[in-house]
Image (cartoon, rainbow, N blue to C red; front, side, top):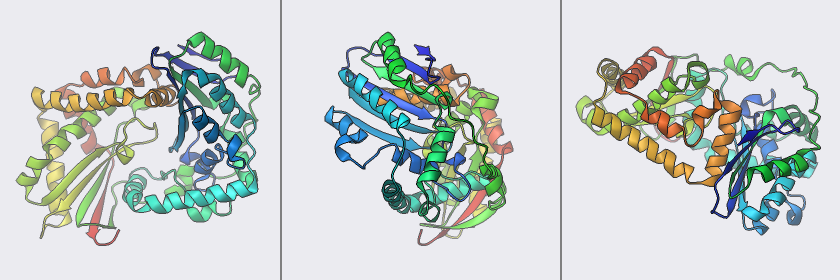
Length: 413
């Protein structure tokens, strides 16, 4: 069931009776790409500030845990999502809590400072793993950057800046509320109208004096196709390929490239033996290996370990030859079916989680057009519709699309 209450918040409800649980996902069209100049990580900081800790006994997390539930949040490049799972009879309380933290957003200076410090620790912990991904992403899509933030820029963030970001982006028309589980859709609609009814007048849109993030960062990034060197744990080559935009070109070409990556991933052992220039290889579809997690420009990342004595071109050329072979000769049906089966099984495993279903519904409605193509139950069917000819076309697309190449130099990361 899908409706748009008088509040302006879009509501998606999926009834799954008998589980005794309900998942709520609040998805907001605000992410790292919306960070203002000089405050890389503001979207991430506001996410943290939505979990007020000034009074632990009355905080969102404490109240959810007291009900026997769990909650978390994720900041992406183009959206932020807050997800909660509780016993079904706690749904009225959770919706009241969601509305309260939206309507009463007003962090203290101490909370802003403490949460900026927490994010700083997260950044330091993730830096080594994210550095390669974010370098390849920025080279492939100038202006793109991670949603974690920059410690130095967040250190001096103020309450006023956090509130400005919140009121600019956390607006009813930019929010989707997804409720999945042992619920009645009609009752959910009544609860949302009651709890979010005060959120009827959107804050005025505030024009940003800063440049658009893509323009602001473009001059600092490598242009598509550039080659750079990166310290890494071993000698190798990292190749970033731009994936098709599912909103501009439709979901079909994008999913065909996801299937292509899975076919190639499964071919890796024989490719290593055949080329002689690699001593290891991996193929990852989607930023950080998560596809359809964002509508922002996406990529596939290929990591090729160079065998002793092999140079960067010795490793790169066989990969491009592999893509060219796939473009000319589609995979046979058994190979295609195995790759699609792996991807569909992963989708089914994820859709068993109420929280994942709620998050997927929110993303589908907020980020993708048409939303019905990317719901938890339609993605497996769309994958099954990918043909061998589609996979060959996907290889041709990758060969013709922007790519970036990075030489990996063995050493400390």
